[in-house]
Figure (cartoon, rainbow, N blue to C red):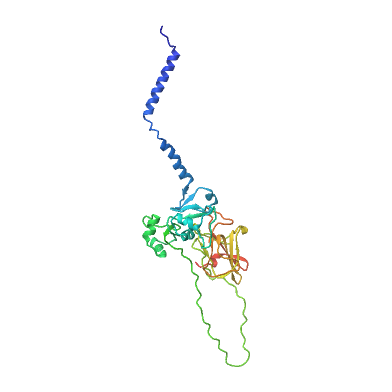
Length: 339
């Protein structure tokens, strides 16, 4: 006996056949599934998304808590290393095939400075230093400055066409930091005073205290850097920046009257130097202080390393805030700095 299908059953069977045939045809045009590609793609995406971000000025910034702190960055071809327990500068340098001096140069550390667990260090790919290109400098000028061949700088930094931009960071292979040398005063001989001919009392003019007045620049610029903010309303100093930091030098000889770590009213790690006659300079936001209260410093002597302690703003926050006080009154430092 032959079973007769209902119209509804026939309609459903036809639709199922059409769907199966359509699915088969579509599958012929789909790419072959590859497990390796599907697994690797998210990993590559993670590295690019969560590892480092390439900034417009050519250096890499880590997308972690460091970015939120806004203070440290890893330059192109360099890495950021977090110091682990029991690590030292020597052990880190050995692991990266570098000299300990290279790590100290780049991170503003002195011979006696020790690293601590959790501290961030910039590790270069080769021994050397970082140089910030100044306006008007070319590759050959920079090479002559460090006494190396220009082709080495070009190759290390992948420079094409020899074009440089002001503010650009360059790795100088085997370079040594250029330290400002304090100028020694030239001794002068005072002519002998001849006794006046004649008799009677000798009168001398009365000696009075003198005050220092702006004379077009009596102080040397305290760092190898550029200005980011000038003296003005609610900002009683000038801000100077060198990407990644720079040594800070005493603008003139004097006595350290303050060398304090901490918040210090927003100044952060701060130094004040008394140059006499009511003239004082203040250096704020330092990372490391090299001098102590009561110490006598000379013009051009390294006193600290630029940092971002205290109240700072901006994408990096690493800068020097310099103030000039005359008899306790804050003056425009540009009136006193040599330009």
